[in-house]
Length: 229
Image (cartoon, rainbow, N blue to C red; front, side):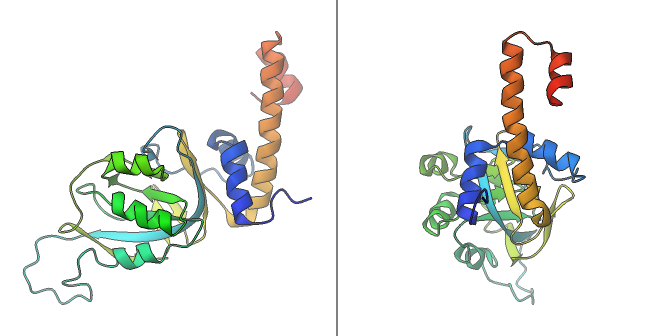
């Protein structure tokens, strides 16, 4: 019997039964050893988990406008940010990167809109603001920290649903993302089912190791017996 029949069941299984450490271990053993995003990207609030499909968004810094710009986004506040936000689908995660750390990439009203669209969270290679309000919404948001300075005069979204890189990890539209307080990782599409199955098996084995150690088994014996530590 399949472990899940659709993405909603997959996301629920990740949040309920797995954690990034065990999934990361399985990915390592399968040869996928560069799946974790930078450690600085962390949940806004302890207890937040992230599970969903990536909707990548590409940001770019802007500077004082002399009025001479001829680009297609000239005079358009935030660039394509509002279009990107409105394009979120249920189960997707807004993934923003490309900007400097001069301003926030996300806020309360964006969270409210994303939540209404049934998105599964925001992943920001940068800062967010309105942190208390976002926490009150219980909207999963992972970021590099909080900073109130607005992106309005400092940055624009220049593309979305495009491939991006964060910390050398490639993320394309639809990439499966999983995050908790110990990090965020990507799970390759071709290996999703195998990774989930092996991760559940490893988690169950680790529970047996814990029981054995609590009963007095030594660490070396436990590793020899179960192959996990």
